[in-house]
Image (cartoon, rainbow, N blue to C red; front, side):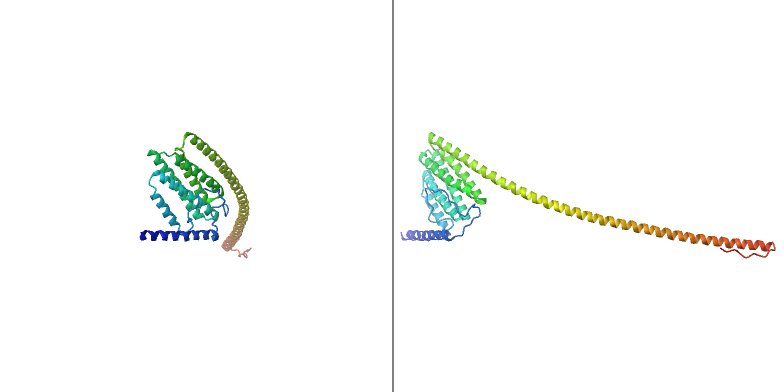
Length: 315
């Protein structure tokens, strides 16, 4: 008996101080606003309260152990469904606490616990129904509890962003599916009322999400338009600069071509003048040689005729 009593006392001791640590962290923790539209979110109250240890406590694993013990001692599907439903109530209460503190990580843990235990509760009810048990009471309990939890998630869905908002959406789907299973155990008149309430809620949620999406789309379009205008101006300035650069480079190229052409013309002119001077010199040399030959011939003829040679003419 003493061996059993000792670990129980230890667990209660740790659980007590774990709860104190949780309350202390609630008072002094710095809000983690990632995924939260505001630093604090006020969610509708729930009929259930949180466990002794919250998800942000390092001793939270003890609460999970307690959960498994409760499930272990629930011997029938109906009993298990009630236990899972009770644990889901603790998780939704823990979600309210963690969102109020702005603790993203702990909020995600609570959300996961909410959807898993709600899903398990509906599965156990379904199993009990297949086994031939009367499930009307548990079906009414699950339907009422899930509807209450959905009201909390509807507010959380509007007040969160990013990863947390996506996880709230996943939890919404899980709870809707579980509620659909629970409604199968309701009497006909209650089933009709539950379905009507589900349709009204879905319509309101769709309208709200559509409005939010339209608002976000308008903001995104305005931002894109501003970015496009800025980009167009920057592009225009870049094009003008590129055009000026191209004109400058083109002018430089044209100037280089003109200089090349001018140098070529100068070279042609110099070559032409050089060739003309060389041709004139060669022509003069030919004339001089011809004149010299002519004088020589004339002198020879005069000698043959016995005439005294006349002085040669020189140009």
